[in-house]
Length: 226
Image (tube, rainbow, N blue to C red; front, side):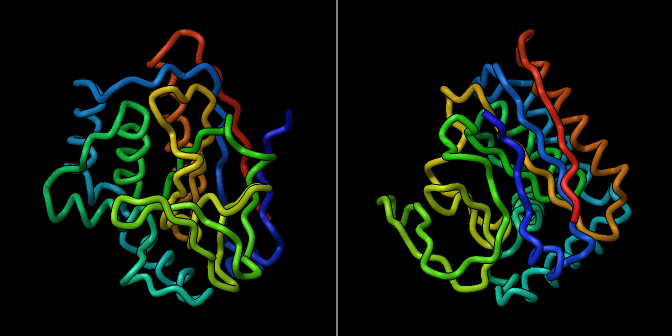
């Protein structure tokens, strides 16, 4: 089954500089957080200001959010949320080996990185502007909840519903990577002024980290532009 994400024309009309790199990884044996994944998180927190484009890149994402009606001070992009947590706490929470890996890359490169269970997708992911009312499965106060998305909101979705709200702010429950996930989809999302070569390097580090987890891991990448 083909698993090549699509980006709707209205996304590039909103941000012509948007470029994403999609990675489909197979036969990934996810594990609990270990010494290696904890070290990656620690190293990322120590390198928050290493990328010279970091502050401007996160500012570009704030502008992108405002362009479709979101309030980034309340719902920041995933990279800024992680960075803020690292600045506040001096560390990032461990989740599992795969999530630790892509969170560390997100913080070190100041880039939103999403990781999803590709096996539960109904069709390939699409990045669109919502009509409004599309279902998004989440939790509130520890209980499952389905909420409608806002008209014009930028969302990732499949045929069943929205999988990530406000571009890369909040992931849904249905497609989260868990202990039993072995077929995974990752997306790294870039705006100006982050260099395309830095986007490719971040993706290469993610693939390298995944292959460290098992000898049978395979990964295919696709650069997504307008």
